[in-house]
Length: 103
Image (cartoon, rainbow, N blue to C red; front, side):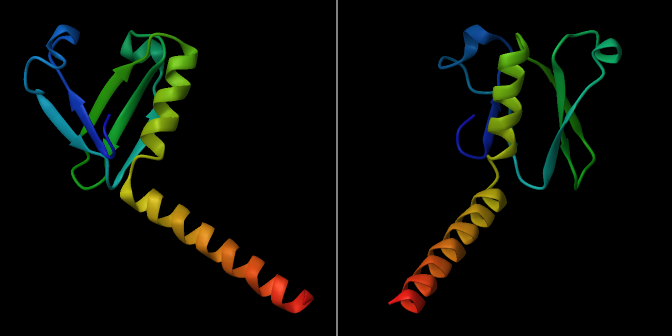
């Protein structure tokens, strides 16, 4: 995962040696937990692309890894970063206005 790009490789040993098999752009998508019984893997989750409906299913090594993946993928989109930036700018402006009122 680099910024909003998720690089998928055929084998873990290919990372850094081979070109990725797939590059997912994490925009206009959502992340959801899967039914582990349905996927046959513990700690499974999906990246669902809204525009195409295509899904990519993954499984983490454990619960903590699953939490990290979900958290990282959720905040990877440029849209999320822009919303967070706008929120911070509004908070800074509100703090500045409050300071002017108190002075």
